[in-house]
Image 1 (cartoon, rainbow, N blue to C red):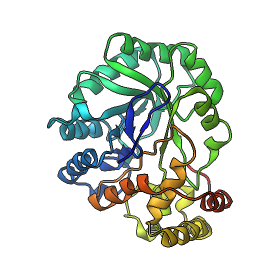
Image 2: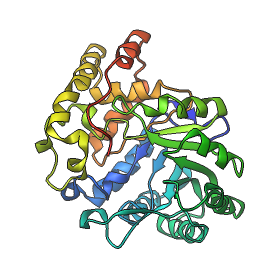
Image 3: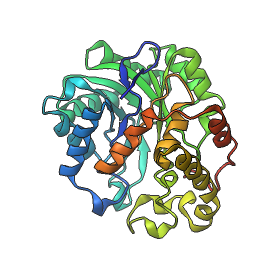
Image 4: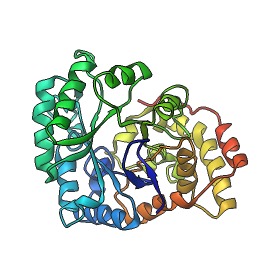
Length: 322
């Protein structure tokens, strides 16, 4: 796989990364299999997918443990290992009805980084990201605690997730921002207005999560019935029947270009995301070998200016993100 830089001062990574959330969290609980997920992570590295993204809250905690086991067989030094901090559950996990709570208190950060290192089975985290900003804690205090982890050699770089330009600037005043992670796809284009242009101008890497519209842009979800009964996506506005029907035009446009190119809809949708900036590295999630290979193949798909313009002109999706 061709490589790109994670920002102007960042390491080289494969042009497509791997999001590991769905292996233990939120999507299709009955379809999870740790052995298969571990095999997928190891195959990803073989394919050149070298940015591996997880978080302490996924599971919670089990995702980092899974990733740690997968990379423990001599693969750790060949990847850029990214995890996150700043979200917790209040008493239960997602499947049990738990609510996500933001926690950016410095004392939590200090404890969480050590816990993540233990679960991941590593001596350093290559990219430590603030999952969400805690409105009760000034970002300067949270970011300062994360910078302490860099100074201690526990973390190499720091990243933010789902932030505004002003919040990026405030963090930069304390410690360099290596990356920003936000949802970006053909059905979530909000970062294109301000955040992504700012990241490009500052040489900050940009990591789009859900670059396939939580699977919708692959063309495999035509109805909520195509999702497992206990899948978290069933609760989201865009996966309600009226919204799915209205958003089908997006899938049809992607499929038409894919067929002309001899590519898959997933590869076409990912190629559009990659084309949005020099330092854009999408992190599609999968726990299936077939879809892993499909996603990795997007690094070889280069859309023409006409195709990009056609996709740029698609209407905004029906339904809010959450």
